[in-house]
Every structure is written in structure tokens, then in C-alpha cells.
Length: 164
Image 1 (cartoon, helix red, strand yellow):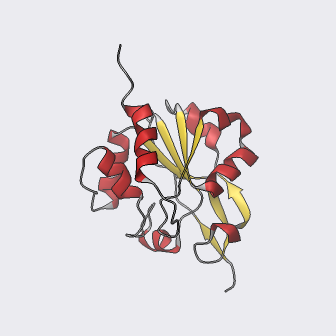
Image 2: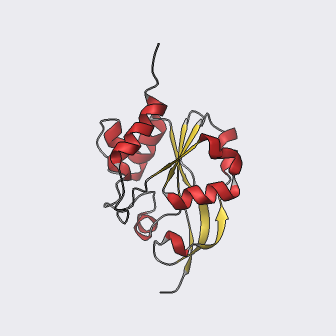
Image 3: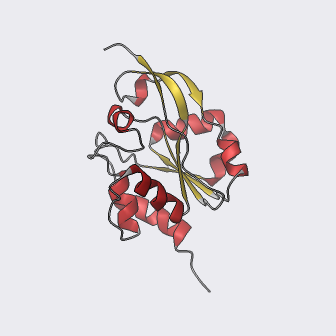
């Protein structure tokens, strides 16, 4: 298979966003649908919505509204690249997102990297953010080591702070 040039999506965030979930680059299915985690087999929406005990929103607009209401920003490290299918390992010639700009325009305190590729690219391009970043197992259906419990534990640290 030959690589194709592809472009990702704009970030979902507003000035009240507290958590940035950073993926690597949209899958083929996501690019077809036109929004993040568009593959119904991807565990992202089930995991995030399940944490808040909410149904998975049906439309892109409802997903956007859910994220903003829950103070979650969503973006990918790679804005555009050459890629074969949905394979993170095939990403070449990437243009990376302006992560620092997102921090200036919001209240983001933490970054969750959805998988190793997003984490390695963040480390490479924005090492100043590593101390506030958590690497989580990819929600991709191709990841046999996914753990919803790990995601839940980390989400609790952001959204359920201990009270005195």
C-alpha cells in the first residue's frame, strides 16, 4: 500500500477546557466520518462517556457539546502527514499541532496521550509538557493491551479531586 497525504481535524476546546486528550492522527474511518474516533470499534467514546455515566452522543455536534460540557479538549499531535491506512508507524512528513497555543487559550492542566505514538511525538516536539502528561493505553481496536480501568483511574485524578 502506498502512503497518502491526509489532514486531521481542528481541535475541540474552549476557554474552560481543563484536560487535553491528545491522539496521534485520525484513522481512515475517522477521516471518512469527519470527526475524532469515528471507528465504532474504537473504545474512546465508550470509555469517556462511561466514566461520566452518559450515553455515547450520536452526532458530531453532540460529541463536541459533550466534550466542552465536561471541560475536555480533544486534538491530535499530527495535523497532516503521509500515512498508510491508519498505521501510526507509517506516519511520515508530519506537521505537528500548536499545543502551546491551546494552553494559552484555555485552562488545560493535564494532557492524556491516547497511545504511544502521540506520547513520543509530544516528547519530541514539546518536552516542556511532559511533566503534566500521562501516557494511556491506546483506545484503538488494534491495541490488545487496552485497559478501561487505567483510563478511569487517570480521569478520576482530574475530575474527582479528593476533598478535605
